[in-house]
Image (cartoon, rainbow, N blue to C red; front, side):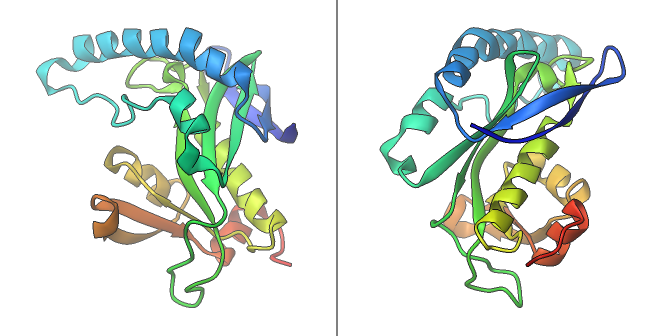
Amino acid sequence: MTFASGYLLDVASGQAAEAEVLHEIGDKQILDWHTLWRPSLHQGLINLAANEGSRASPPQSVHWNWQEKANHPSQIWAEGFCVVCGGETQGMMLVNLVSQHARLPGQEGKHLVYVDYVETAPWNRARLHNPPRYRGVGALLMRAAIDKSFFEGYKGRVGLHSLPQSAAWYESKLNMTSLGEDPSKQNLPYFEMSTEQAIRITGRRSS
């Protein structure tokens, strides 16, 4: 089911590429993960070792298994999203509407969309494949999380625990508020987006 549409940057051509945000992680996405993402990740790790040598630090999501994540019993309340461009799955995201509540001052305890997992295809990560194929996948997925929050009446509120390697992106690119490391989640940094921040990103009203 198409949730939204948008554009990615095709790095090779420098042109905008039309993309769809689907409100699902379906058989096509899992097939792409098996047949496209995993070989691309393998080659990307080889590229990373060649470029950075012994100091290379692999992506902290390297062990993620999207087939298990999308179908795990613990994800009964989760909803999947994906970005499709050029007939291939460029990114995937799982969100939860009930597992977490807002922590920011002024909105404590209110409902939010919690991003359980979000990942872009290996060929879109510059450290693994330089140049990457597309830019903007993560931003498009996060915009979908914000739009989902507005749709549910949560006024744009979004929260997530970030892998340490990605923390700077959420803070500097999305301007989410860092609430520090969370001891209950293996000391992962926790970020939250307020209604005001969501409005600035989307240009829409909270009502």
